View (cartoon, rainbow, N blue to C red):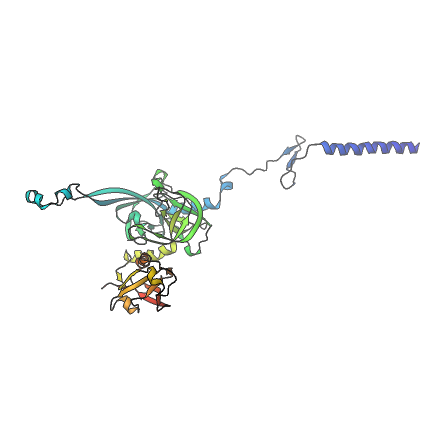
Length: 403
């Protein structure tokens, strides 16, 4: 009897185990998060499991990033600039050459037929405040010829700005507005820039700042550094920062800012590939360390003195000179004349010397040496490397004021 009871009990136990295994295999899986944690909770009132919502709420705080932080910190110091300037232009008489003849002069007299006109034009650009007492930086090509300068801030306040000083060669201008406790942007170190690091460009492209009194913000990276570019009208752009942060007409003078909310450059040029007047891929900014050197001079003197002279004449090296001069290729400029008692003479330069480097910049031709010289200021010393008797020597040339 007891044996029969044990057998029946074992049968029921086996059926129970089999049912449990089959139930586990066919039951729907519990909801799990990606870490294998059960995200359900038990509702004691309804006696059911309910799924918890693990999705982050869509709030301003959850959408904040380093870029939005930089935009919030730097934007109040960015300004839109509107200028009025008077431009002169000359219109030539199309019949001037036809009537420029003594035969007609005896009847009509000799008259100057070119007409000069003055026209007031509007311009725009960007700028940024660099001190609480209202000093601002922008490009010389934005305000250098301005008759009237108006600054618009993000708090909708407008100020008439005074041009403290401007330098055509470096394309830097310093402005001043009256007041105190202005928001301003901190300087960074443009010598510490890394290619590939994130940057943010601020400005007033196409005058869009005026629509809502806020700068247009674009994000990109530092694409390259140390770019030497040729400028119009004698401007010198050296060690420029290339960025793919989008900038356009009107961005000139605005700040290029790193992820520490520090200005590392001034947006100045765009690459147009020769067929466009708008952004097609790259913009260029003047490094802030280069601007710092000009800033203090403009603040003190209003301009950068460049009334120096060298007393030397040069010409390009051609293929016939390469071997006799001990050169490897047709680069450098050969000195053809040195005036007596000139800075060049006092530096020990001689006719026949070939300048191959100046201030660490390779000299390729006359244009490259002129760019280095034009970029300097009165009192600077040029550290030059010259070839003399097929040997390299170092020469220091002080740029003295023209007497």
